[in-house]
Amino acid sequence: MILPSFLTPVFTLTVGRGTGDGSYTNGQQVAIVADAPPNGYLFDRWTGATQHVTSITSAMSTVMMPASDISIAATFC
Image 1 (cartoon, rainbow, N blue to C red):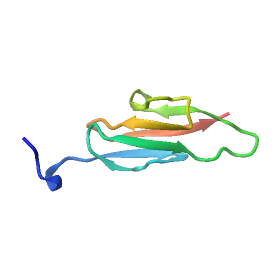
Image 2: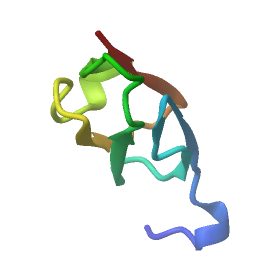
Image 3: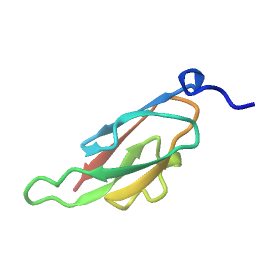
Image 4: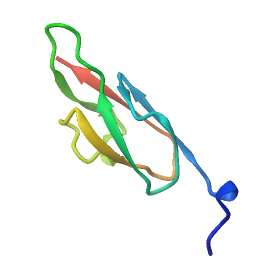
């Protein structure tokens, strides 16, 4: 059964120190990009709900949105 779009549940992706925040449906692929690192630092990895991130050590990656709200954050070293 296909639900009308106004009945399709959406879930929140929160991205700390990066882009990709928003409301998405279960199974939606979302591009995430880490912010530019502070001077003297390099991107290290994504932290948080990383089981949904295709490559946690890439500053540009993809999240496969689950049927729940999740948060991830870029870290620098």
